[in-house]
Length: 496
Image (cartoon, rainbow, N blue to C red):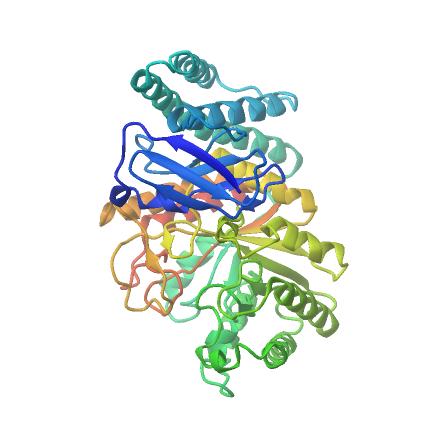
């Protein structure tokens, strides 16, 4: 068994830092090692099956940025514990320098302000690295370096996004990307319709098994028929699905009695997939066939069973409609769930296996839901998002990115899952502001990457049943949150 140890300075009690137990070690192939975290308030011990070098990732407090997930550089095992702030600063400085050099080779030039800030981060790190005989001074300097480096990482991603968008505008009068959400109010209210059409050029209609067939044998298609007709009338690009969802609480409740009968479950799913695609044949041209199969959770299927199910449903969908595009939705695309030790394949390897099978997979959707528990995606700086997109771009398939961020805390009476908003330290209007700022920072960074064909928000309104608590762009009373205006402004300025 491999063991890595890190000293935390200043000491932080575990009950004030629950995120520490979600830390993990990532290997050189980007897979997450099964990781068991022990923490006594002073020292973190990471236990894993292998003794190979790895990078330790953990949510760490950064002034003005909350507790983003930050990683060390690649470290070897040793008897003496590492100083965690120093190694986190080292990891971020190294990452930025490597990415900066790669982009400069492509003709990108960063601003003088960013260059000066990077010099400051490196100088602070150098002083920290040469002060390890004084633990307190070393960690204080490393923390300062990390905080400056985090700001540089965000600034670098923003400047490169602006550079990339400018390059794309030189080639195309309009950036050919989709910005979408579910049209839950379609045709009900003229003001709501106008607001939606101002903000989005695409619609994601949640034709999902658990919603259509909440009771076995009783399928309710009317709401989705109306949405499809409304979208066609207003010439919106339509994306349907995911037709079935294996993530947390994603399948119909009545299916639980069949969860140990893999054959029956596959038959039920195949029947619904075929029926849904035939119903909207020629009207819905983009489908998310499945979601959450890479991580599983709703049914006790092995990883091999889930991979087989993904392959069979993609093959079936192609047989029913050979002209549409079929996407696979991947949740937790950084692969944090692998730390539990129940998965052999990383998210990328899971998708790559299906791409190599030649099943006609047209694209990948990356589901990034930040601020939710027990299953969600830990937040990161913008540079980490860019690197994630570039990593998935190696599959050479179009990417859609689904986004979600809670705008409120506490119980959500219309949330139909067991998920909760994980937003410690903020409440009320502050959370709505954070949701809007998060979306505003991510949209240009994502759309600037040429492999991103579309960005979709999880759901429009908290006034109807939804899976992610408080994540709607409209409040429970139907009034728009600031993030709705962010989407509309971005579309008018960038997507035209």
